[in-house]
Length: 292
Ligand SMILES: [Fe+2]
Image 1 (tube, protein in one colour):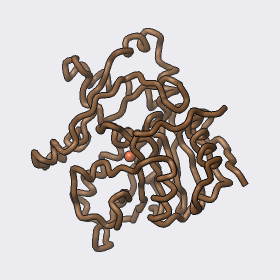
Image 2: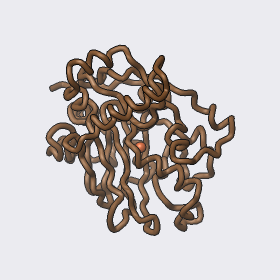
Image 3: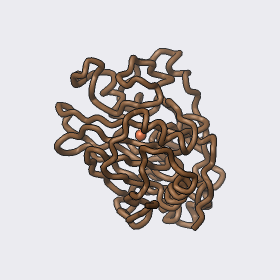
Image 4: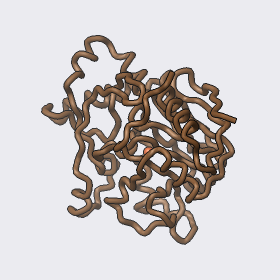
């Protein structure tokens, strides 16, 4: 079999099947998945039950893995390999985290619209998220399409945004949510990264509006004016018709391109387990241009 696709959102999300993600990818399968990612931006694979090692192997077919915010937190982790990122409310002892735990506090920031690791240079390329345990309701992950967001800007805004850049900072969202108990060393562990607000997606050649909550200011603008404008642009980029909401099933593996999409988790009952496992590639390598 070879890669099959069925759109789940008309512009940027497809269900994918026909490739065995547990086996080493052939060159043609890898290229086909890259081409699909360049065309869509989010691919949903159902009934995948990859082990941590298999998820690392699959992810590494597309580039080099990164550990993101672990540079700041340096917590003892539940998952054995630092390249596996624990998106869960489960503590080291296997019990649910206390409601006010540092991990939960930090995880709330994932419920704000963001691109993984946009606060770093290089920023993230693909993320892969494998679902292991899901709550009975809530906890969806929503995605939005930054290329469509650019397409729908007015000509005047497109012109105004050309040449503007935003500074993205790792702890901006945490501090915004009242979680500011970080040492100076932690605050400096990842220096802010500056990214143009209008970018060209390397895989498709399409322009996109690169916003998200890690952006804390517009370079050379007064802070308040920049933040209000960034909020306005984020509102534009997350209009409901641009958004796909993924309702998780156990075994889903969702992969997305952080260079062309934003995402956020949705609220759920913290008294229920929610366990997902993420791998994230950094953007050292640009994927092949889409064949089609
Ligand atoms: Fe994320």
